[in-house]
Length: 389
Image (cartoon, rainbow, N blue to C red; front, side, top):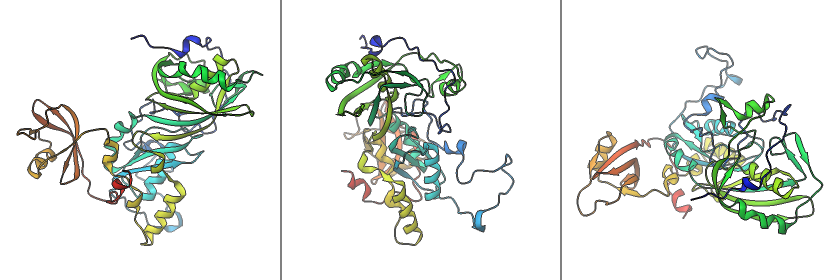
């Protein structure tokens, strides 16, 4: 099948990236991508950036002073998902560190970086939920974003240096007529400031050093792209639902180039991440308030958790007996026999007595465990699953 390519109509990229201004949030890859293209898997990625326990020197064996002489809180097993409504200005890694501290969790990580300048859904996996992160990262994402016309910037958002300008402003009709070219399976050149690796270096690092990075077009899928608002202020609001690896910033750049008016992202919000909807999101202030109530015995942080298996909504479930569960828990395969044995193959998530046990593969009449879950500790409140129905 021949892929339609929006880039065929786009002029050769000639923007000069030399002397590019460093982003003020440069501690985080510039990445509103629909699945986090650098594939930073969530399992404890906050360890690399540090958190509330960050050492102040290079010797981890040296004890550090405690602020206000407060005793160090013991970490605990916490399992589930928190869908943070990330505020603008916070990096994804910092958000993970904050939630890990609030929950006193041993393990935490996010399922796809959200740009510091963006707000919205940042799924954070705690404990055994980190084993289900790939299923969320592979899911669809939905964004609401605003494009400012008249300027193209080297970062494709407000933080970059202006590299092209135009007095032209597009009409709503011209924009809508163009959108089909950016819908479906297309090819897209990632932004210069992206986490794509070029000869072992991140593209954004090379761009910050003033190098012109030649990035190759990549296939991405845009399931839906609509114009929501178009005013007289030189800005337009769009909504996009897209697959893994799509750059929303690149959409603004390429649409502006074809229309001849140029453009860049000036506002961005993620409203859907895989199975997690906007109604699942919790603002940071609300989480902190819940933490304070829980500390005084007036509530439980379990109320903020979604079950681990929420990330597995698109995967078939298979219930097994306690005897088979014991074998799977030891990493042993189970023979599937009898009239109730599934005749399909592929990945399933296994439950016993209604409780998540493992991720497994069905093949050759056997159930083979791939990931076994140990959900001992703090988990989601029993009613959280029913709230999402």
